[in-house]
Length: 387
Ligand SMILES: Cc1ncc(COP(=O)(O)O)c(C=O)c1O
Image 1 (cartoon, protein in one colour):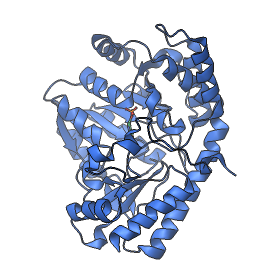
Image 2 (tube, protein in one colour):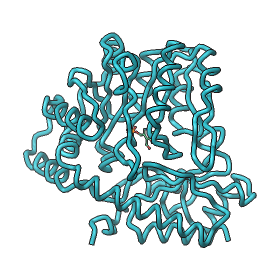
Image 3 (cartoon, helix red, strand yellow):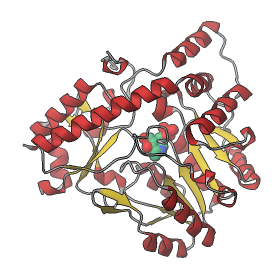
């Protein structure tokens, strides 16, 4: 039996996913398939490394040792064929924190920052909370798959955007951008002198036949204008450990970014964050391969279930991530009604599509990173809610 079938009770662990549906959805005890964490334990090597550090018993200030940087650099080379120099690395507790720090580092109040909706909510929030202006070049759905409208993208850049927030792979649509697409993005950002902030937090969970390409790895010229964000949090389910890495090749940009962190008083990483990150990147590969197989099976199961029981719902074609983006527009219900049905009749917590900006209306996002039995339960509730 695969380890991913194990059902783990997450109650009484202050789990956002399991214990905060009342705060977020107005009702407690909803079946939680919303926020993006998994109901799985990380690789044994991660648990072992953390336990061993706990047993040491002294938790004073820690720095990020060269071995952690080495684990990241080796991982990126092995998994993504990207040669990174350890000196290009900085660290943040979370990727969202890094997004905000990058916006502060590379733009001024009132500047325009580009994104592509529907997209991860904090992209909008971090731009707005930092008093910058959101410029949106929406993605287009072509044959149930998201594509970039490059004419609109170029028009947006012409408005004078200083920074482009790229979600690669894409949350919520699950697109793994191709080399052609990334090169075109790079070419246009070069032409209009726009920096690229590439959030690659989902880059390790990629389905068979697809391949994630870090945009900064495409060329020396392009790499000079890219800030890349990665983390072991999605890949190995370590979000609570709060450790992420920022990769900036351009020395001037790196200085600016590190200066922002220093101004915020950010120093090093949480002891367990860095221990977990290093163990995961060093020893987690086999576990990850098994995870990807398991998630592919869950996805297949969910799609078959929808075909059979809820044919009005279309699952957007995803190439990676453990998130299903469900097009419910054929149900002909408003977003409020949809939310009401899911919560009241289904007792099910899914992310409402409207959170992801224009283009998210009529969609919901379902997280399938849980034991197959729990995916079945969620789908049963979805059917109950909508039939
Ligand atoms: C695209 C994207 N970026 C960032 C995050 C969150 O990153 P962190 O928890 O490290 O702030 C998520 C979580 O779902 C995400 O999907």
